[in-house]
Image (cartoon, rainbow, N blue to C red; front, side, top):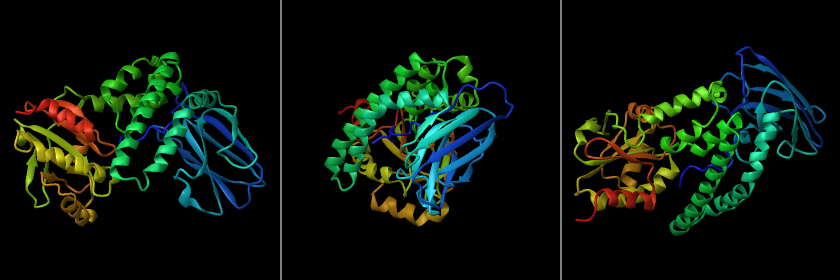
Length: 374
């Protein structure tokens, strides 16, 4: 299953002009909040220049003041009785909004999650988009709840349903961008359509529809830079070469496999989705290993997890070459702009990338298309 789009919809920014700092004020009135309680302002956007802050909730009220160089995505999280462990979980009492110049007010009888947010034009636009996505979000939540305890066959069926809902959301994102190219809510829509592992050929045409003013914002420039990095490893590009070592210390260069179809597979021992996908990868390897096909597993584990990496290789029966420098952000991950796993690249005998991010049945079908039965 691809990393979900669900509720990654945390808008990116508002159109900004000068780089001077603009003041903002966040006011809240949350009735029936038992103390002690604190609200935390968390950065959620591409830019990293807005400092996180916090305020004590007194008699259900709070005020946060600060400055920012440009509007950006943000989130308020309410923590009661010092329980910070739930701050970044789905169960956290929180509200997503656009942090921009001026005063934004949060009003609710009991919580942030139920708050009415006023004073931010961009937040209002964001909420309009969220309303369009709410039906599919609700369906996805119900499907995710069924994953726990599901059999492999049931998981496969659930993944097909969630994939269909994700495609529906992508269509809604694309329509919104086309209709509203001059707002950074649309930049956020482009970013969330791409998800954790954007497909350059699918995302760039939408990004290119945005107005120059949107692209010139800090978040617009940051996402443009990410797209440029993705372009270097998009379908049709020559695969960048790299050299990493096996567990035994033997260096392996990707270029040494030139002349074969090679699946470069990024994973880690601690990555649940990677481990669940490994049986599919192993099945493809067994079917094609004697037919000019190789897999090069690239782990982003760290040195302290060496034992877990080796155990995962053995437990999952990964009999193809495995390499890593056990530094997490290794040379290969940087070259291939890998920010989330599992992620893979299928490379043809000439060294050209011909497919990316293949899972399950799609992996089997794609390899079969390039290496047909004799």
